Image 1 (cartoon, rainbow, N blue to C red):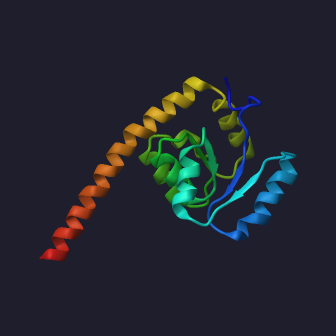
Image 2 (image 1 turned 180 degrees about the vertical axis):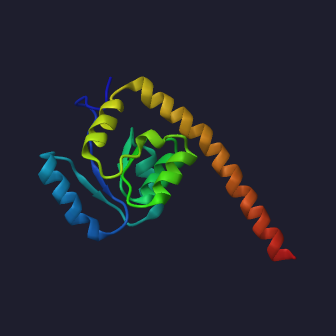
Length: 148
């Protein structure tokens, strides 16, 4: 099975703000998709929606973080070095497309492989353990500093 099969319904999740609405409408217009636009304001609801996705394409940093941290295969656009660093942290830098339409098309095609998606989920899950350990160590250090 592939991401392009009929039973899988793509949707646009507005992650950050109502200002993204016009961008979502432009995406629908240019792609000629009839995808629903989902808008939530609760961060936990947004993270839950992302976590239940088969795959994510995001240009919002928090959307990319939410997907990777839940081992959801992710393609990321980029306008800042922080996206590259994040994708490297999860060992999936090949899925950073910047603003290159040809690379985006190539990555979307790669995501049609169930084997590749399974590999990404495992890679992201493994790296997620490392990232959580690093965050925990950082908070331990902060706590120690605050107590001294």
